[in-house]
Length: 261
Length: 151
Image (tube, rainbow over all chains, first blue to last red; front, side, top):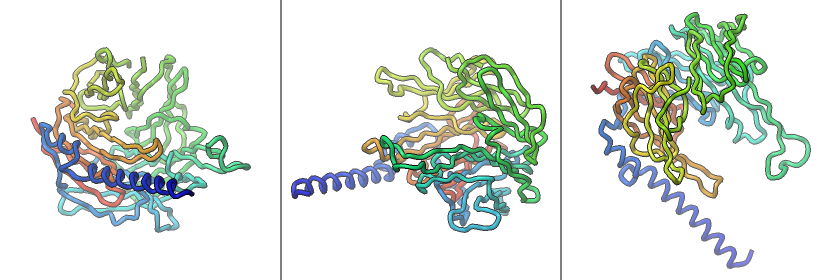
């Protein structure tokens, strides 16, 4: 590399570093941040201080999208994958915190493994296309964790073709049924062939998992028991061929969708 | 259902169920195809417009999205994420804001700015005249915020 080229290379590197530092300062400094300033102009309170901070003492894999939700009884559910400790039960933790704002909140924990986890030869991409969703029954005693992800494997030949990775992907859907009364796994099952392209899900009044799928001519709601056994027959409803933007499945199997123009 | 919004408004994000009806966020583009303004819209089961919120401020370059409603259908959280790209390859989150609305009246209740250097998830609970917002940071810390209802 010639001296002049090296100099311009270093200048470019310096420029990138300075740009990143300045962006970090702008983003993090509440006084200089434009967004923060405008928010303070809003007519309404800005919450800054939490009433309670709970340290979960977890080694959560942040790429696996740790998530929080309230069950219908107001208990907090935290789902995360532990990146360090492996136990015979698995790496996924579902933590339930009862009476979270009370003086005596209680913490319960269930450790489990799904039927399949994503894989990728490039480990940094393993969690890129993974979604995990939790669905809780009305009493909170039954919780379903539905996993969607991909296993990516290298194809024979060059590592890249036309600038793209020479890989093939296989997508999976699986579910784990969790009994939150006894803190045990009720069932887990691969549902790829049955529930691929599911667009919405809910838990009915009996604690069954309802899953909504649709094709060009019909909607179909599949009911799975807490043992993840299919309850026959699935409910099928006709639909016109419009494009759907967003669908919502209610626990009584009523479906509401927004249609695209 | 087909939602009948005013002409030029484009629905964005998911459909959410509230106590008073269905809620969806929608925006209108200016001549440069940039989001000019955004509102929350409440529609009934037939898709007829029941109510719309004030214009959502501050503007969110990538759009405010209705994210979650409390299980009693009374509290609605909307979120704004903005990213900054470099060389069309590296992207980083530069803004992560939440706003709380009364899901029945679509009135603004308050705002929360989340740290953009952490991965956040959040949930909302409403009971006895107050809302609790839980924010999970990097799967490690859980922060709870309590907000009294504003009438």
